[in-house]
Length: 214
Image 1 (cartoon, rainbow, N blue to C red):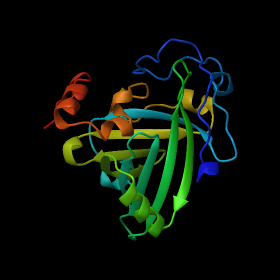
Image 2 (image 1 turned 30 degrees about the vertical axis):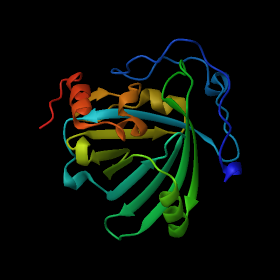
Image 3 (image 1 turned 60 degrees about the horizontal axis):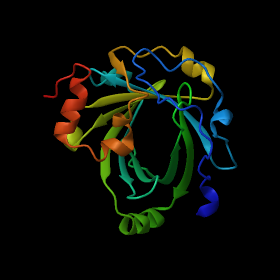
Image 4 (image 1 turned 120 degrees about the vertical axis):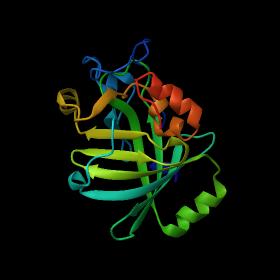
């Protein structure tokens, strides 16, 4: 497994923390390589913008639906994921490592991501051996977005994500209709944090954006 996981970035890019990105990603700055983020044979740079939506998309706009269960492995940057297509029941299993971008990394760059696809048996063995909090959501395909509708203590939270191949596409992307705020720079709404978020913490976090949970 080791050769599939990229080494952690060692260089920092500036000392300022990323600010709130309510009106879009940060202005262009040094490229990812200058911030210690270098793609390798398996790791790739993840560019993503994240938005808080006021409602679930209309059914007619949804092209695909998948139920996702994530386990964020304690003490690591690893995530076990099970993805089930709701139309066919087909399942995909992955082990993912996410190395966050250093503070000050510009734009929509989130860090380095490496995926390793697993068999069902491999997934089951790792699931039994690796403890950590879980997160369950339904991901709706609403091109060019993936819209996540959360369950359990996160019921009522609807997030949209857009991924990009380059910085220009990320910077010029127009937020979707029904977007309340951009959360790209808000670490409270990353998967790893949400998996450890209770109902009251979510309520307080959404209140900062003027959203009241039912």
